[in-house]
Image (tube, rainbow, N blue to C red; front, top):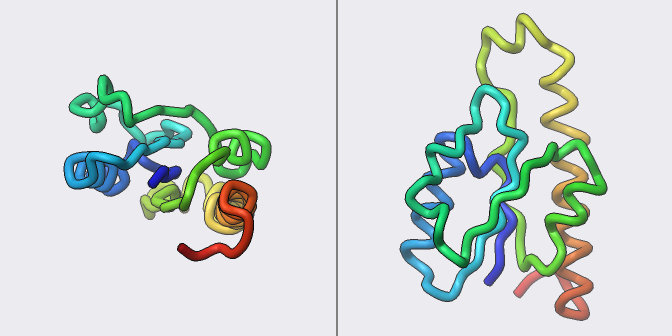
Length: 124
């Protein structure tokens, strides 16, 4: 299984990455993160040298970046989101953009990559 984990450098996403690599010896994880205020590569130090782990710096609102990162993945797990209330007041325009188009791109492109890799269907 190969996963693309968007928002994987954040608090919750990084925990998911660490747990999945610890639990599944045959899984690969591509961590895709914009590294804003919420993303921190220090959260992933423990897996940084794991050959099953790859980090890609990118924005889920960038269709081409998501499509490139999703090549060969079996599924996308999304943790990317602007979540801090004080940020929603200071930069309200970032919240709808992050939650809707970016996630739609990630889901669509991940499904497309899955379909191309496995021939038909979106479920295993």
